[in-house]
Length: 200
Image (cartoon, rainbow, N blue to C red):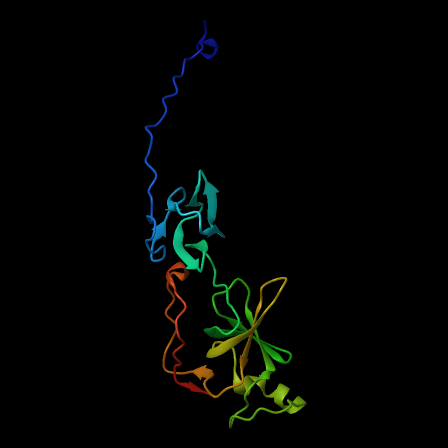
């Protein structure tokens, strides 16, 4: 027979069974653990699964690689490549990317640029009043493209998840004399906010 007519026998050999890693035993703290897909997070069925987890054979296992987070009885895994997902009350540091009509666009590391309305900003002198057309024309005098600012999340869009920011306090404003230090978002834990020196 010709070479292309010959049949070749292929034996499929199964890989040796790999033992599944158990991250936390009963009663142990679930947080501060890095997991990979297939790792058993807990065998305690009092916990409930959430994002990045699945229920398999009476235990909760990870479906993505990342860090384990626990809120009460809810267990989730935040993936390594996740973008920042803000919540109301978060203090964020971002860079102005665009000046639009009555608002600024701010890059804070989230999936979409944040939105900072002119009506949500203290004017120079810590004045909060109704904004006029003259204020709108002077928006680049307050913040311009490339400025680093500190603000607070006031609202999260229900459909697209866009963050809306405000600066209704003299704690917020432009940050001078420094820059952002970006790290892995999955390793961040929410802590009490500390405010840098800002100017407005």
